[in-house]
Image 1 (tube, rainbow, N blue to C red):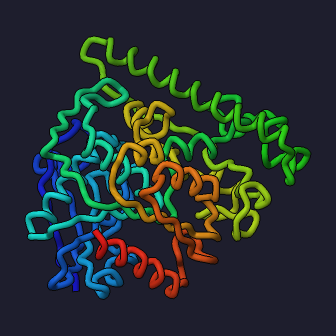
Image 2: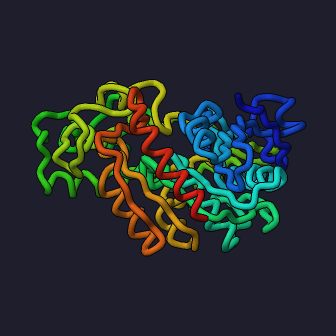
Length: 371
């Protein structure tokens, strides 16, 4: 059985929640699986996904490691996520763990949680942020961000901005038109592949960065414009069309691992690229700058390199969204502090793979008991 956890957190922006109750009395919620007699507790967290039912919680408790599946205030709200605020929520979770008498804390960064926990620990060890990328003040205090003793990364993306660099469709020629497209840059145009040539990939990757940078320039300009208006709004919502166009999802010879061709985490690549709800589809100017733009500070490997704690890097070899080059970069960032292992045949979510969940739990429990 688990214990429900409710933790009060610092108030944030005026529109970060559509719930008046949450705005007036902001709280985050978690599910705690307590292993009696353990001196170490783990926190499994993601910036926006609900991890209260995470598959690692009970297996870790069964291995003597208490585990908290914790949500941030932005659960199910990618459109409003501000990373500089979300790390305050994680800090509140670490403080709660400490209040329960645990001596040591381990952060588990699964999927998009990898960059998040790395960003948190980097700021916990070297706090240097007082504003968001949009220029808004964020009152981060050292006592709000107690450092932890170790980090485990599993199927970890290098960061939301890094995902967007590789996933955004560079063939879009009109941000207001879902279908306006340059055929020479369209990965779904069979004249371009698969297989995709190295020349096409070089051009394609450069065009992806160019589109993302154009969006950042537009977002900054629009933010200045609306904030200059008398009694004007402080933020604005917008849509980013076609954000799941990574050629690696179609051509497994690129950055090869054990994944099959023509898959994403959510379905066929072309359908997901044009889907009405996909990665980064709905956002605001301030949230875009904090999480999806290249100015985002929540870069996983860059943050991890600024930390000093032991790191366990667990690679899922059949992952269709976190690739070998991503794990290589994490490993370089961890350096001599890192231990890298593999879950052979592991998909991103380990759905229907209980033996690999058990293997992962063994790896993380061993790390926890060693700190």
